[in-house]
Length: 283
Length: 299
Image (cartoon, rainbow over all chains, first blue to last red; front, side, top):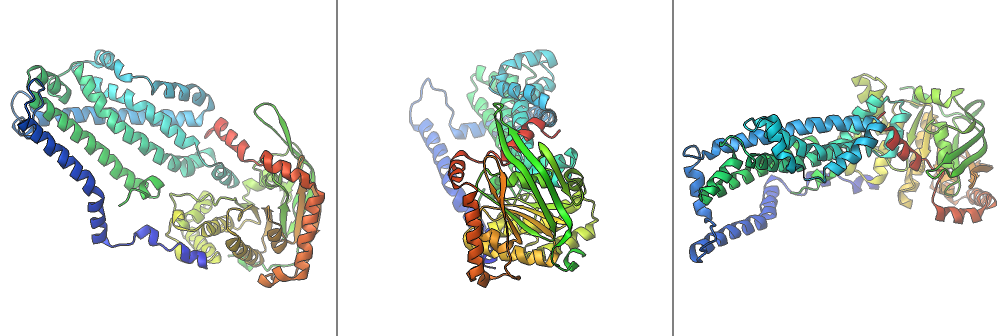
């Protein structure tokens, strides 16, 4: 049939081989990498050549030096701090995601729960929840990583609830009719239709969550806690006028955030390779 | 493989597959506005028949199809399928259904999409594979088992949907404007294909369509409906010889029947057609199940 010819598998495998794909990737990322390198270079040159008295911005090279010098020793051991903060962030992300998915399943299952909880969740996700950070420190112990995890969990919770509920309920009407034509039980419909349908929404929420998790952890740390975490390192080194160390901590936080995000994207690609959002992520 | 071995015989009038008696269907919209989708519907469909439901938008032909499938319940009257309630027939998986959209699951391969009903119905793995492949051969997609739906053209996706509907050997195939989204060329080819499948399987088909040529080409009977409220205004017997092919579409008898259906539609109220095209299609189930989904959730 002609229609068979029209939809050859070419679209799936791409037009080129492995080498070509790598070339494609390089060309795809080259502009971004170039702009980034240029920005860092300009920064470095500006700090070295322009008198920025009164504006304490360390050069990228100084930040790098501070990063290396304070990696595992000194007053602010950065590696340990980054590890502790990442632990809080991931722990909180896990708690918030699990709770969020559980509530989403309930709201999708019960109309009353949905009518009550979804507007609340949408409202709550517009609230600057970070304002609760001092309270969480108070409730769960300012020195315990759990207090930071709970801040993160609350931040992550609402986008997960809203997105996953949407994924579970916004199913194609005819897909529901199809399942009903098979006399499928609600449980079967959940397993075979709603859960797979919700996966892309879940990953959207998780990607929002990874960003929020580091924000939550670090801001939580600003309000107090043990000194071996990135947030405390930023606060203390800044008040000691060691801005190179503050920047090094910020760079580490950025790297941790990007790493978390990339891990999530990798999982997403592995789990839902069929979804349009993943398919279109070329090369 | 029983279904392919059933020889297609002339419809046996003694065994009505579908019996619809004095059925009304009204929908109540959000603002308590009552829409009468169907009124006083009487229809019998015999075993092995190919019956098309044709009519303007809003005439309730899709609703009528869904009544047979027990996807909506009648407000009044009785729907019997295979001599039992439509609900019982649905639970017995007596019918397969094909929608205007293919409704394939993106996360499943072509083969796994066809296996979906077989999984739900407890076929063992070996039989699932055998059945799915057999059905995909039947719709000439045997080479596309491991493709994903998004890698197929619209016509191919719809053929997968047909394979899926036939996989568990239902005795009835319900088709709701299955080729409405396809271009004319593909549509004619699909018509040919559906006719071939119908002749090979001997299955009873209820086919909703907007297209007069499609209805005439495929059907043994064309049920003509009018809108507001949806009623059956005429039934046109299609006595074109089988198998029908491209040449059929050029026969004088074919044109006569096309004209007969067109005039029956006009008698049913062509003015209403225009009004309905503007007013949307309140009789179809799309909006209602949407609401049901919101209200019922996964409960």
